[in-house]
Image (tube, rainbow, N blue to C red; front, side, top):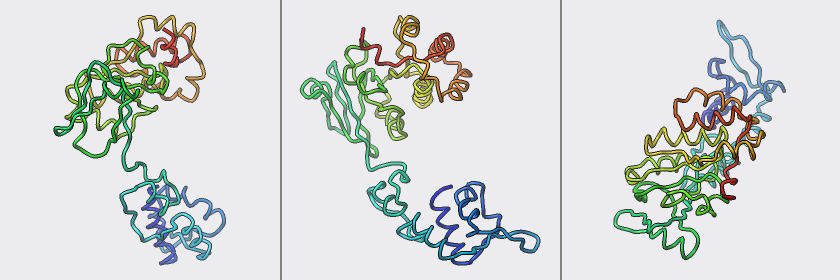
Length: 281
């Protein structure tokens, strides 16, 4: 249940003393199930329908104050979403986002990112400092041309040259791409760029490849080494499929040939493959 909706429901309960049962969604019932179990809230018949009645207002008020320390009627606002979420919800992750997102880049081949007449000499910065970076906020975005590798894990990103791809630059995904990062990769400023997805060869990695391809289309390719079958056979890790069975079942419906090629390997060896193995040559 959305926190704003829960705050509104709690406010009505504390102000009115009861609410129609019809206002309780399944998620609202789940969120307040401990209060029902303790008898703080009770369901009662009311005419032709039913209502939820508050039986212990002080305890319910204390529960509401614990969840919403800034009050039930105070709308969250501010330019630091996660700090604001702590103030309103005691939970930084309730914001779902933050002020900005750092984009880490390792660039080669004289790759330059541009934005409204500004230039970020990413390859020069990489040569001098090992990495280039910028903060991803709102448009206008930084853009570039060439081929950009999207690298799931940190060590392959830091040692990207050893992967021997034809990419002009690598961006660190840090696992699952955020919505903000996807919006950047799909933006007009990046329309001249093609993408090479470099992740683990497991259900989550292939799902991320297809997720990127869904927003960027045919510009997205999956990095598959020529000896992928031998790598699966020698280094495949069954644990990568644990807790990902539902994802793998869904992936089997894809028609993407590169994704299907990796899925066939996962099926054949009952294992996934961590991308770090590519650093060993």
